[in-house]
Every structure is written in C-alpha cells, then in structure tokens.
Length: 395
Image (cartoon, rainbow, N blue to C red; front, side, top):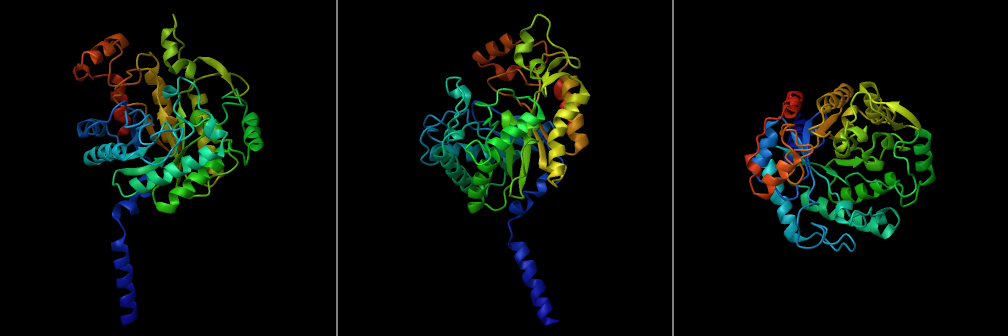
C-alpha cells in the first residue's frame, strides 16, 4: 500500500509540474474555434485585440511580415541571407503577443516571407521562387523556424506556428491553379523528393521545430496559395501528429476579389461560371461545399479528425452585394464539416476591402482620405457583415 501511495504521489507531482499552457496547446484545437486574421502594416495594441475579442473571436492569425523592421525584412533581417532573428524586431513581436494575451486571444503566427521566399508585394511584385529551387534556402528557412520556435515556445498567447502563408511551389511549372484532380496529383508525384515537394519541406521544418519545442501545434497551408484542392492532392499526411492543415477560400476569385468591383456589372453569386477542374463550373453553395470539402475528405482518408482542418482565411469584398450570401455559404460548410475558421480580415490598417465593420456606402476613396488625414479612428463601424460574423462566432 505504501508503495502504491508513493507511486500515485509521484504521478501527481509530475502532472503538477507540467506547464498548463503547454498542456493546453493541442487541446485548444480539439473543438471548432473561430477567429479573424490580423494582417496589419504596423503593430497593434491591447485595445485592438480587445475589439477583436469583442466580436466573439477566440483566436487570431497574425502576420508580422508587413511591419517595418531594423533591416529589410522584419524579424528575418534579410530573406536573401538569413543570419538569425533580429533582436529589436523580436521584442516588437513579443509585445504584440503580450497585447493579444492580455485581451484573452490565442495567436497563430504566420509569416508572409521566409528566407528565399520574399512576399511578392515586398519583392517588386515578382514571385520569389528561390525557396522551391534551392536547398540552401530551404535550410535557411528551417533554421529560421527553429530560432523562432525557440523564442516563442513559452509565450502564453501562442496557439500554433503557421509555417508560411500561401506557398505556391507549383506556380513555376503548373499554370492552372484549379486544374483537374488528376493533373494536381500527377504534379505532386512528379516532384516528390525535389525542392518543390511541399510535404517534404514541411517535414523538415517541423523536425527542426520539434528539436526545441515538442508541444506547440504547427499549421501548414496547402499549395497553390492554400487551395483546398492542392491540399487534397498531397500523397500523405505529415509525419508529426500535432499538425493543423489549412486552406484559404476566395473562390470564385473572379467574383469575390477587388477586380470584380471595377466591372460595369459585377459578377454575381450564386451563378457566376468559371474555369474549374478542367472544365466550366457554376458557383453556388453546392460547389462551395465540394471545393472546401476536398480538404475535409482528404483529412478523413488520412485518419485525421475534422478539427485538424482550418479555413484559415476566407472573405469577399465588403461592398459586393453578394458578400453576405457567400460568407454564409462558406461558414455553413466549414461548420457542418466540423473545422475551424478565421475570417479575413479585422480592421486592416492599409486596406479596407474586407473590413466587414465598414458599411458598403463608405467608399474606398473616403477611407484612404481619412487614413491620410489621421482620422481613421473616426470611421463608423456598423457594417452588417460584421453583425453576420458575430452571430456565427457564438458557440
């Protein structure tokens, strides 16, 4: 009896010794959670995150890559020649995480730039393909993530590491983003083991992260800018068992994006027809369900629960007359399938296109004028689309 008592006491002490935040990291994702994207040009304070929390969000996907740093590329220093994290930039990022934590939000950090893959909008509008052609840059990217995981692993705000926003190793050789399923699978088979093998790249990055952080979940975007059909073309799941598989949803892009608003008669949803899966397709809630469902179907075949699948971005132009219908259809399918979601985006400070708190009658010109005058805080924030999102945030 004494031996049993000692054993039970030892188990209890071991359990108490485990950090509560670390134990909860994967548990946070065991039930569907909803949030928003934080893709600002400058860091934000606690009040910003409290406003996001007030929408009902429990998490945010945060990029720091737009921020002005001590060197060319924030935190990385130089995507051409990574040497280590920039300490001054890291301090800024940690302060941002502190603000989010104080507001009660969990954060997924999501760089737009890695060594050898500078974000196109910071690269002269030229796609940077070096990460997918040069193993040396992949090793630098692996080193960056090891360094970043070591720096962030104990921060209580962190819910996951998102390796790279919208990777596109297919872009240089596969021109049709929404080609046939056979075409997509054949491309992955043909590039297995090469520097364009996204699955193998993620395995390398996660292996380096696990050398310093065994617990924090890792979020990975599918290829072709996080297209769910690209994810569904992967030959296998990753070897790590604490991975979240992410996709982004803006299809049909011809209708949901800014160029549609410049048409004399914008394309409508449902009803718009686009090239899709090797043919033509009419977009409605059924096609949205099939497109998004490809990621969930693939996960199920890998033996993964739906709570390992994340609609990490979705959205449409706030002034588009069909935006509410579209958002509803996307949320319906993700929630029905049992996944997580995060809308794009919350109070983005350099672009108003998908700021759902703003009403449709606020023109882009008015927004940018107020921004230039330093009066952006005076904007009326009573947009009905945010009311819609709020209503869906309720558990």
